[in-house]
Length: 145
Image 1 (tube, rainbow, N blue to C red):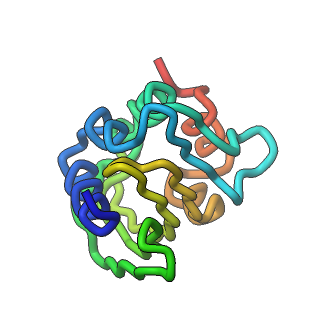
Image 2 (image 1 turned 120 degrees about the horizontal axis):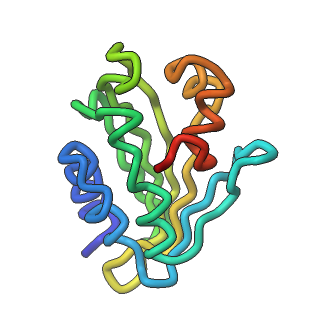
């Protein structure tokens, strides 16, 4: 699968709330990185199984219902794409609408994601989820059961 194809497949899986399928796009030893991670947040998750575990409760936090914007930028390296996208949905705990934008730099090898650098705004996410404490609980395991 080419990088742009993986982007399409990945966004489709997010809309289906199939986090196991989304994590399945990673290579067995692939990496999910958060370059803007604050203290106390994981800066990287290594391995497909760890990524699957990390993402498993995401649909219980944010119910993604639409991709409202998407631009895929090819780079000089054919294995790397930069994706700008915005998703809209409902914050599950509050049943309120939200919209968040992301930028991801994705490296693909052998038809699988080798490296996914996720540039998202912790401040925007905290606002959507109801505050910094809610964001911290959601992304560091405090709300995971």
